[in-house]
Length: 609
Image (cartoon, rainbow, N blue to C red):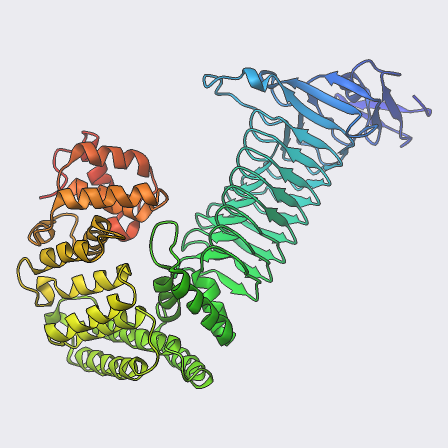
């Protein structure tokens, strides 16, 4: 030890009266790290020489702990003993140049339910720098309470759960220049109303996401992070989480570069580079409130709503044409089996308000003038008119539609029909043209022979294009003038038409689309009256899920249809797989999902009338 120190103790608290900072050397002055910490005063530094120290430490407010280097100093304890170091209610201080490690994790069993982080930070504002935190039985670092600490230049790796876990309102750390890699969950996880900043971190090869942000009131700023080769997404926002993601690199992830998982989350995404991801560069549903600005998205396996919408708003017509051409040529599907070309057009034409319609049509007119020989903008424009027509009509029964609603409905469908007729004179190689034709023709009550011709033209371009079959099937519903049994005959014909490619899968797709569109979960008799074969629906769904195991929509439709047919054995198996990942488009409301689930598990006697 060095320095002459004045010591004052007041109500059990010891102060360094003269402010003379000391260095307490472990191994020279104290045999253990904890003994040096206990002896240290505010402003003192505990310096640790090279070695392995088997201890579980409690930090003291105001001190600094410094190792010889992160490779030379290892502090470890058995995973069952607790955290390697706990920092609680410490307003200042620092920890640097150390490795913290759990031991004995290989001996943990499923019965060991109390798991500890390697480093626990609670209601503290210290700095942790140049450390390695690894092999945790739970998270590498937990940050909770009113915690404004800084974690910088650390390596957080090989922990059973997330590398850094930030939870609770008031937790708002600064995380910068860290490496969070090979962790069993997320590289960094913010949740439960936490805040803070993550900047210039490298989050690679984690089992789930590079950076995960979840829960309502969680709001963080993510800037210049590298999230690469993670098992799910590079950056994930879900369950109402918000914030900004700016200048991040999210490449080569197994799912999306950046994923906005639900409509409650509305982050601002700016200037990120999301390339060569297995799915989308930036993913968000068409109902999203997230905003994306000028991002680079190249070489991704799937297109996304936000990306297509952004290209349209920026008048990047060449890129839109290139995407459409590629989707037609490669016959690209999503991992759930649905066609990406159909999603491309839906991204362009759906979810525009009446106020925004003039802007959309103006941009599409520009596209047509720039590319007069292309069917792509004309299909999008016709689809926009169809969407606008249905908004004017409303979703109720015909008797509920106003006179003005009918007038606008037929006027907009007529405009769509005119655009499609002009498009058909071009070199058509896109089945999407005839999907919109069928949609418009259904509303205009075109004769059956004409609708059959449109369908035949569509499948002559691409016989396995699911949306053609679904739109034609909707027109054959009795509520749209179809005769009894006609839809069932069409579904069987569809199996024959696609026998070499889809077979009974297309039968299941038609049934799924009809069920989602028309079935009242409280009274499915209208669906039963269609005469569809439940055994064929089962076989088709089983084939879809075998080929596309990530098809959660079809997992839900299969479960729903099995439930309304009261096939408890199949429904139970499917409910087990769904868990809480129910699809609102299928079940409409959670109460319906729970009602059938309760019936399957034996707590409700009747799932429907």
